[in-house]
Length: 458
Image (tube, one colour):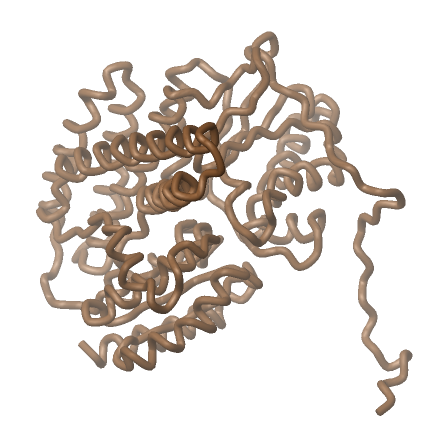
């Protein structure tokens, strides 16, 4: 069968940037101590609250910095214009945010592109995590800044393992102090989301709730910015918990909704995932808080399983010692993360205002899903979603899996393995959605349908 005439086909715009020669790599010069006082650090960390609390660390360190804040819809446009084709929206959002802000700085300050390259660096998280890109995120960040004209712009990327491969003499190192501070910033942001998810759908005075959350935010930031933060932060959480318990709210039972899925699409809490949990709240349902602490623990759990397997199948004593060292590292890290989260959660006492926020037992989640998706098939949150679906099948009125467009592990699970779970648990009110950054009406209308069914089931 012959195809349509070429003249009848719609015109397709070619990529704006095409490399004429073989691509190798992009230069990423180090940020050295000698340049510390004349360089400004631009940074973002998934969503606003996490970036906001991490500011306290930079202020204590005396660094020059600019918090780039939340992702916005325009980031997708910037990312698509300068990035590679057919990428997932987390890649477009994060890379687009960098060049959107660089262009804003150029416009507002009058600096040339070369002056911006010399005076600014970017710090962001993630990059080596999933099977989709095989560690290409940092190279994509470098691609967009170079193609946008900021040639030689410097990028600092820390992964969930926070391994330091920065050269000696760097102005910023991912040492233990950095790790502890980013952990605390993460947990404090999680506590804010615990409060918002509990009170936003129930508050009788929405403006009063917004004021209380802003006051809580300021209290926690002031405590964490102090040199005595280790003592002051728990006390600030106690005061915040008591304040939130006084927020007027109704006590009617409302549908409980669990959201899971790919890291960014699940935990962005901004335009990156259509403000999904806030939308659920505003529709009169309660979303279980999305905790980044849980994701950090999952990374440790995954590396723990890899270490245990490595010890078992090590070819010699030297390899076995390396895996044992990795195992000790993951177990120590897990203990520290869990201690901070449990300490801060007890201080906040979310039960006083009807909040949730418990950490899941990842060994139990893996056991529940093992029969349907082997827990050693790593990549994204594959085995987590299956185990979570079984765990929550009889406890929630709605279960949403959210993933970026084209996300390989999430698609394989949500569109494949999950059908088996639905046959075993037909009462599970399940919805799988793909985020692309530009189909908000379609996505939220589907979520509204699930929430309608959740209210009926309740």
